[in-house]
Image (cartoon, rainbow, N blue to C red; front, top):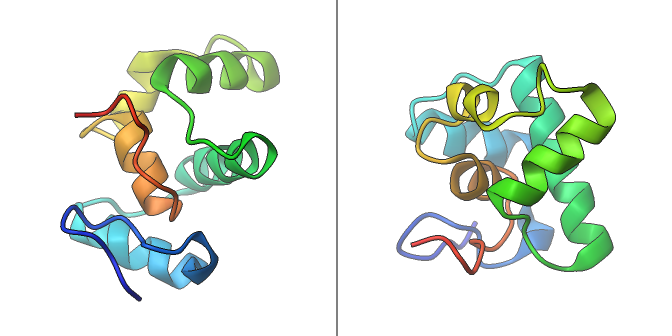
Length: 101
């Protein structure tokens, strides 16, 4: 599994759930069903649009699918404390969003 200096996979095709678990563990996250829900949502967005979603896009997608209880940045930051767009895409094996520092 080849990764860049920040830990993002160099090839989206290399991703597996086991790799996601390894990356999450390195970031101090024990993946729950709630994490997987977001990870697969992020991956489906990437497959459809060929870009990683921003936090705003992610919040809107979750609001549309699961309501405001989950569709808010506070919920996402509880799951991915280093930043939901940055950390969720990394664990999902996707490129770093272009607007993440």
